[in-house]
Length: 275
Image (cartoon, rainbow, N blue to C red; front, side, top):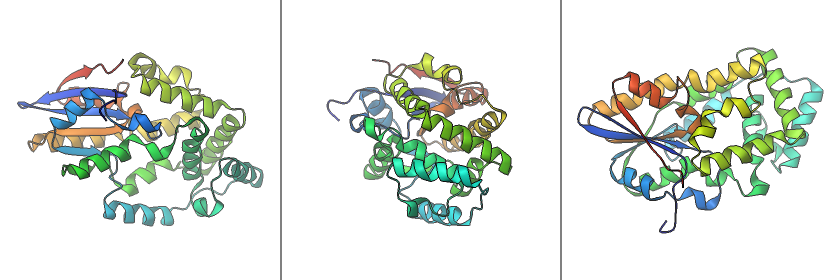
């Protein structure tokens, strides 16, 4: 940590005489990215409550996640699509018993997070998980902004035909190498704290080309952000100094958390972490 430098995206939000922070994370990373740099450490020292999408060090959250995963019933994929999915699992060394029973959208999520391992970008180095451990070790209050049931529900497409489109499109991008390239580019943008590039994510991700993809993005971001903003606001109003660390895509656009907090009367200041 003595040699760590800042990565990611940070905002200071203030209201009612005290400040909290919003920090955009990434769910896969390189080993050295896990350790917070000087500006992030300063923000951590100024706060007393860590707010994560889900605190996976909370036994109750873990148990509820396992239960919710077991109870999900997803779309049945056509046999050729199922075979392509299985082949990608083999390519990424994901054991079949690890994904057995998971809905197709969850299987895709596991696959997509595994694509960068050959490049040193690994879900085992997830920023959120490291911050959870850091916060628990420092005896901070750690809270979950969402529920496992709600988060998993948002991941699942409401119509089976949309699931088929999403799976087919995602597998196409894995097979032609685009998905791995996108993961690497996104990770590079995060590591360099390139705010402008992340603002234009929709222009270069090639992930919003179909109606099903656009609907999925709305579910994963736009429909989740208001509830997280309300939870952060509630914690801050209770006098807590909150360090809210969630995936970076939740921070950008008109429905991003900084914009939503500004609409709630907060003064929002971006802290430039770009080296």
